[in-house]
Amino acid sequence: MKITTLEYFITVAEAGSIRAAAQKLYLAQPSLTKSLQSMEQELGVQLFTRTSSGIRLTIAGETILPQARQVIALYNGWLELGTVTSLKKVDVYSHISLAEFLVPDILLRLRESYPELTVSYRTEAQPERYLSADAQEPHLILTLGSPQVDLSRELKALNNRKVVLASGVYGCLVNRLSPLAQRENLTFSDLKKYYLAFANHTLEPMNQSDSALTAIDQFLPDLVRTITDKHIVEVGTVNSVVELVRQHTDTYAIAFAPAHYRYSGVQTGELVFVPLQEKGVEAELQLLYPVRAFQQHPSFRSLVNNLESEMQRFVQVHLPA
Image 1 (cartoon, rainbow, N blue to C red):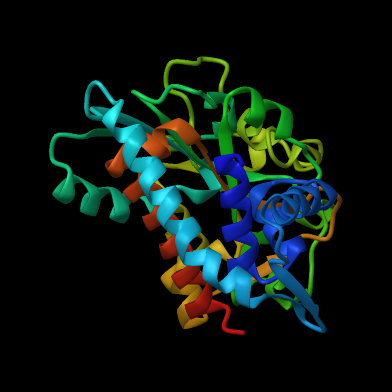
Image 2: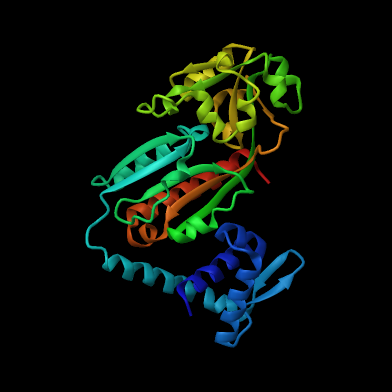
């Protein structure tokens, strides 16, 4: 039996459904089902029973689950024994729409626990281009990806894992007094007479051809075909963008829901999020990282686990069931 089979079993047990587990593992449901069936055949027991709301563990499954977790913990410990050197450096790349979201606070706490660890943090229009299998200087990527884009081949080739932290849409953050705030949704054409506020610190400083338009083209190409650089106001930071929108009714910013709840202006009602009604505005908040680094290094594992738990807490606070 493969270690991955045990990991699949644990994920399904925790998710309570094949579909939810398959999405989390980035696997096709038939492949996951086949893996579980092979495990049942090898052990000679039934692990799950179907219910109206999903699946639940059998008595045998409940017995095996804690033992499977122990095996995974032991396996990860064995991998750590093979680590010649402790982790010295981690590169964290975040999507420009997520600048200053989740990561900075978590990195501060990480440095307190692992003072010897050097962490670099950058925002990019396409952070997934930094996918790497390197376990000694790993890259952790927090990005917004399209649900329609299949990264399974790249992830498998580099032994990377994808975790979907949240699903949502792009939209416009606007002043509550703006005419745009009165709309239930917006099209790109609705934005022609307005100014897009953009944080230029997200641009690559060494690339002279880089611009706000080229950055936006990476995730909302149809918007770039609608507006011109004359309708873009570049400011220094994300906080400056939010403040600009707060003060002007003819300005908007592109944001991703549900991450937009982090802005204080949204919480006070000064800013309104209006979703875009266009093709390609659906997105997933994805966490991508090399599996080997996660297995070998406690500091890297702590970083990944903290990001997952903080996002779960964020969603629970702002999007209660």
